[in-house]
Amino acid sequence: MNALSDSDLAPSWREIRLDLLRENLRRIRAALSPGAEPLIVVKADAYGHGARAAVRCARAAGVRRFSVAHYKEALEIRDEAPAAEILVAGAIPPAFAAEAAARGLTVAVVDLEHARAVSAAAARGGRRLAVHIKVDTGMGRLGFDPEACA
Image (cartoon, rainbow, N blue to C red; front, side, top):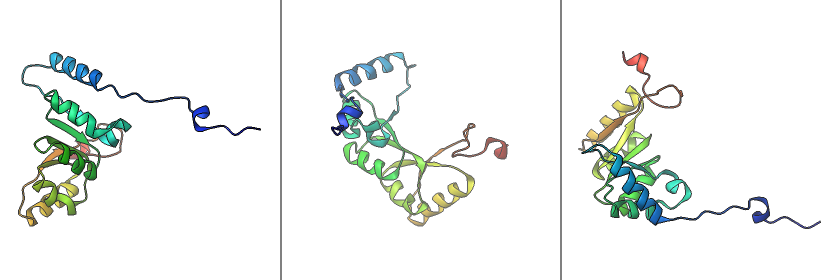
């Protein structure tokens, strides 16, 4: 019996078309209300398509806002886009709060305890930190419980 190769088991490929990304970004911008700006999610290496290339392409198209899942990803995007707005959508450990503030990142806070810990850590580092308040809208994974906040 012949052994199957990976390509026999999963005969697929990916083709990255930055020209199509540029066109999609153009269409998205055209559909937005005046003054609205897109935020491009490039977590998990832009879903395996190459975050740095996607960020370069998006920046060339005028995009200045990006989101990632984890702190390490944010640092990689910050290197690629020094002036971009970058949101870390996943909860960061409070120990990273002062550095996140120094790097101009916005971080998600997921509950009151996390918000207080991140705020205190940033303050101990002499920093103020921009935050995004994550609300659990029903999946029960992460975020403030709207019922508890009422």
